[in-house]
Length: 231
Image (tube, rainbow, N blue to C red; front, side, top):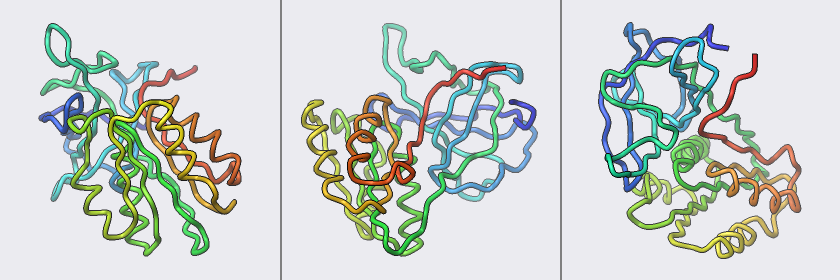
């Protein structure tokens, strides 16, 4: 699993919004990171033999080919901020990274593109929207956040509103989110492309709703967070 991973190190970290940070990562031996689009997903593991792998959205650093930025979610406790997985992101921390993976997008002039995001998922979805905009495809984004202070990538979403419809919904209850996502996918053509990223329960709900309208193969989930590697 990890034979193609390369050593990397944390160089700095800053806050994106309440509970969310950006972490600058560079390859340890200044090797070039494989080409990727903003919003691509990268796997990280603590050591070369580790079973636990975390998937994070990433984006470019201007003029750097040996570094990138990943988004992480952190919560505060009595000792300060900590990563929800207890993964350390302090300057100088070392780990291994895999090759970035771009989400495949079907570029069809007849397709409607409906994008859903919550939490860190918005960084992946914003990257996909940039690719759709560059290809001249219309899209709509439905982004959800608990509070305004916990809303990340607000400027990036605002800039995308020139190319598609962007809806940001803040502070909705579970039932209100369920209603909003249901209205977003109904009615729609079976060839519509549904792309989503966020907490597992959020994605499961939208997937159930979308299956009533589109082909299952047109539902694309971008899964973030920790996964276990079987050997």
